[in-house]
Image (cartoon, rainbow over all chains, first blue to last red; front, side, top):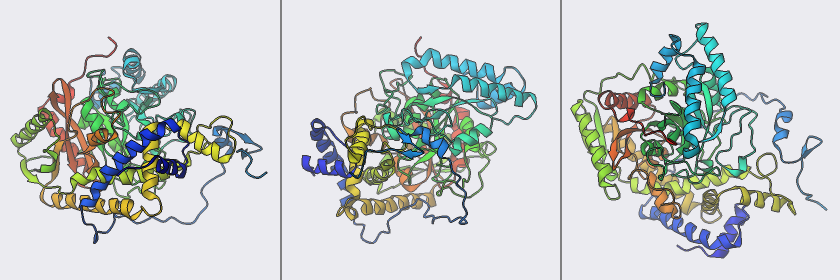
Length: 95
Length: 485
């Protein structure tokens, strides 16, 4: 299996990654070899097998619907690259 | 002090032969002397450690000490530590100082242990050599031209070089057992759900599990007892009582049936590694265990299935790093999309980007059934293989890794060769079982690990099986020459 450079660009876009043009051939090659490895899965017929999502087949634990989270903005905001008036700043989205 | 067991250290602290502060200073001195060469710590928390040690000394003086009070340890830099940078080995989190503690960190603090610092690791725990760290590679204390294994390479090297008696670590596909094997120490990955994942930076949530490294099964039993248990903050934490791991160490192994999977002794295994492992198994036979060959027929598919499941979950988990609320932000973004993609493109290393892309591809429209669903079905087959095996045997043994420690740079350019370092460990994660690696000897002067796989929640059993071996052998007491000397 061989991914084209165009496909790598598309996957990088979907994955939210800005990748330098000069690195694309290397990614195309390594991603293709990983997909070759992964495609070994085709050797087994799994038509009647139930997929396994959790090692212990546990079901989601539920808890009472009570408010437990407290407002911790003062602790979290100092971690942000840019804040103003308690808001997280990003580049302008609407002109 | 640095060669004593945890039980000996604990007894000496209680008998006031030395103080926790003296013990901690001795280990800090070993870090200062060796770690400029080994690079096993990202952050050394000297001030905090000395403060915690004097607090522990006060508890000991007041007769309020537990078995781990005043004992030093290191945390893998994947566990969030309040007020102490938690980088996860990534440029993305180089400036991240968590406002809260992981449950594991909290429990260990409650036990009175003293944190020496945060250990180096492959970025976001993705790697088998510790060469994928933003903070540079860790070197193997047995041969500094070689890798310590990964992703918990810093924890393994720090324990091996006797810079700390114990360390926390995590294992998604072998990241505790493989570095433990390559560094000649004892490491245990618990059953999925046994140790809380709360505050442990997520890589592949259905596989990630925190665990322990130390110089012996006995030492790690102490630490596991302090870490394990139900945590309502982790939705996959399992609500069942924690066994007495230290109390259970002396269970007899007379009549124990050991399964040897044919698939773990075939092609690809270095013959010298195989010979060391076979000698260890003969030792178990002498101790009264029975050996039975077993089949794990789908185990060759564990690496392919893992490299769908783990990247898929990673691509989803790592989508939270967007340069907005915390972590790295690219300079001068021209719009919001540029902010996201350049922050991620500039701050994630190559292997992390590669896995995000594999996962994104596997989950994308039209490919989900062929990749993710198929991998989850194979996961069921692999898990069923283990289930059948455990109907006939008590534990499964084999080599932890097909080779001893490889040289720095040897496999970094070829992801597939690197991925195959974990061929014997990955199945355990896919099935969610517990497994450990213990030192079983040397091949050309480099440590070889014996893997012991246990059924669900049988940590106490594999610890006792490992302990029995360590009572009649001394591989686990052998330490490398001090680095930097």
